[in-house]
Amino acid sequence: MRVLVIGGGLGGLAVAKGLLDNGHRVRIYEHAEQLRDGGAGVTVWSNGTAALRGLGIPLQGVGRQLHSLRAMTATGRLLWEADLDEVTERLGSPTVEIPRRELLYRMAEALPSDVFRFGKRCVGVREFADHAVADFADGSSETGDVVVGADGQRSMVRRTVLGGEPARPTGWASWQGLTRSDLPIAYGYQTLNIAGREGHCGLIPAGEGLLHWWFDMPWRDDQAELTVADLRSVFTGWPEPVEELLASVSEEDLGFFPHIRHQIPKVWGGPRTTLIGDAAHAMPPAVAQAANQTMEDAWLLSCSLAHDGGRHPEPMLRDYEQQRRPRVAKVSRTAALTSAQRRTPLQRIGKFPRWIATRSQVISLRSGSNILRGLTPPSVSVGVA
Image (cartoon, rainbow, N blue to C red; front, side, top):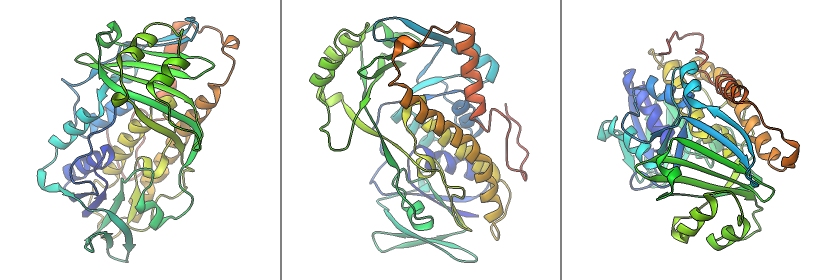
C-alpha cells in the first residue's frame, strides 16, 4: 500500500519505520521546514521501549536507563519507591530517559531520507472507494491507499474525518526544561517526584549530565505564564535539590505546556484513515505515558497492516483501533485521576512498602499496554521479545 503519514513527530516517524519494514510505500508530510527537535526529555517506560524494539528502533547508547522511581512530599517525607530494575526484569524491557531530540534523531536515522516531505501543511483529507487524498496549503495534493493522522493534538486529519471538539484544558500546566547540571541527581539513575500543596516537581537524569525537570501547577488559560522567579518563590523550602536547580536555570531554559485531554473516540477514522498519538488521545503528562502510548500505536498499526490489504484496508484499521482504544482509554483516565489527586492533602497519604510500589508499576504498565500483554489485532500473530 501507499501510506501517507501526516506529521513528522515521534509518532509519524515510528509508524513510518514499521510500515516501511512491512513493505509499504510511505511518505511523511511535515508542515515545518525540518524536523522539530524542541522539547525536553521523554521517559520511555517498559511498554515504550518494547514497542520501539518491535519497530526496530533500539535505544542502546542514548539517554539514561533508570533504576528506581522515588516519590516524596514537599516536607521531605518519603511516600514510596519503586525498583525499576525489578520492573524491567518482570516486563522484559527497561525504562529509559532520553532527550526528545535524541529520540527523534534516532528514529530519523532509521528511515531513508527520501521518505520526508517538509513544508507540507495538511488542510484536509478526502476519502474515496479506492483511495484517499491529502490536500496541502500550497495547493498540492497527494494520493494514497491509507492516510495516518500523526499530526498532534490539533490534528487536521481528526478534524476533517471525525469533527468533534478539540482537546480540553485540564486546569494544570507544566513549566519544564532540559539542562546540563552539576547536581548529583543528573549523574544518577533515579527519577524523583515531589508533591506538595503548591504543585508538583519532577527531576530525571537524561544522560551525559543532562537533567530533565518540570514543575506542575494549577493554571487557567486566562492566567499569565510563570517566570523562573515565580517558580523560585513558589517552591522555596522544598527538598533538595529543588532550590539549587531553580537557582541554576534561566528564562531561556523554561518551556511552558498547558495540560489537555481528548475525549477518545470509539472510531478513529474513515474507510482509509486512522489516527495515532495525540491526534487520537492527547492526555495530561501525570503518568508520563503520552509518548509511550504513541509508540504502542505505531507498533500495533504496523502489525495490523503487515499484509497487503490495499483494496480494503478498513477492517485492519478498525481492528487496530479496537485493540488500542481500551488500553489507551485506561491510561488516559489514570492520567486525569492522578492530576486530580495532586490536590489531595498529603498528610492523608501513608508510606507504601517498596514491593507494593514496584508491583503497582508492573501492573499499571501491563494493564495499559498491548505489546506487554501480547495483544494484537485478530488478523495478526506477533511475538513479543
